[in-house]
Length: 259
Image 1: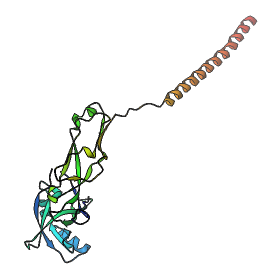
Image 2 (image 1 turned 30 degrees about the vertical axis):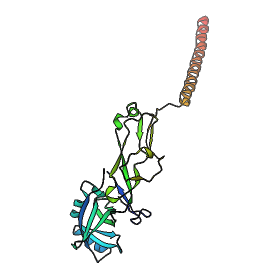
Image 3 (image 1 turned 90 degrees about the vertical axis):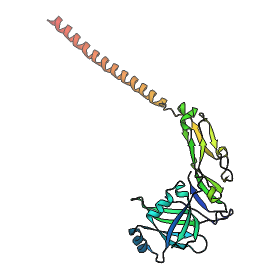
């Protein structure tokens, strides 16, 4: 699973960060160590020691870092989760770098984080963020109660906001939706100073009528033909059986007369 942040910290070249729920706004201190040695052998050595290699981008040249797995887990399991504003301190220097999680890599088998990329961002400059949409009130929707199918074609939207004001997610009330109803991007309600960047006509949620299975008419017709053919065949066999018995009766009559 990856989280990407692109571009600079200006509105025109705003970085992207995936967000997911209320208001991110939480700041968490993260202690990291600068690392001089690079390469796969070094990263394997770090992981064996319980350290996760990474890179801090922004503010000049990228800085290769490592962070204790326990320290990273603590920083990313707060109320804002993966969307916390991280005050990164390198080698205990006292200076912090306000950053967000840009990308992380996960071991496909063990599920552990194996690498992180952090992006330093100025807190007074808007960023572009990808935020998840949560549907609420689905069980109360008249269309769903009538057997309709609620679907969500769009699960994430793009917004612009200051780093501390990026919503963790946006709720969309669907409790009033009936069969055939559609909600679009323009129906979303976002916090103040948060701007939607996508087309307001993009469909976010729909309720469609349930599908019914109808047997093809050809099947019934074929069965009828087979039934007719079967009846004709059985009638022919009976007819042949009766005609075959008639001579036998005649023979029997002739035999009686001869007697």
